[in-house]
Length: 148
Image (cartoon, rainbow, N blue to C red; front, top):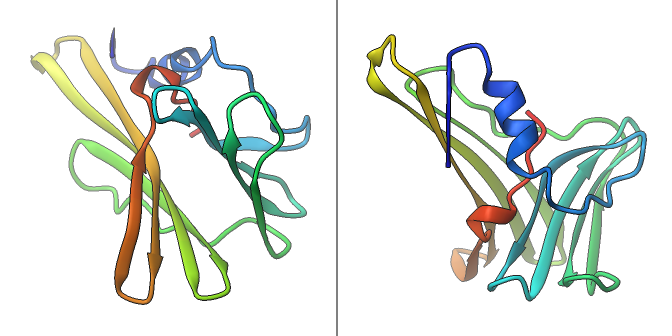
């Protein structure tokens, strides 16, 4: 949770996760990187021109699950441009199981439109099979790293 002035959103987003170790490669950018379950697990989605990768597993160790989307940038469910919140998601499929990774920024102003802007980040993954949600994991708030 940070206070920033208008026009400084990008800097605040980059700072929000600066303390986190990033493992996306030099030609990739991080759609989302975070820990879940009080730091026990790591979740990461990296995007490059060649592929979009999903990695999940024990924090600080090799991922237990790695999935990739075909070439090029993913078809993100976009932010529609209305309201104070920005949100996107991308879905990976493994057999009949779907992993939908989401990221959201909630913006609010302390004193109307002229006051400092407050940013709250939320992110995670929900796993579904058919119409049944198997699990929903939220990122540990202090660990969220998003490249917007």
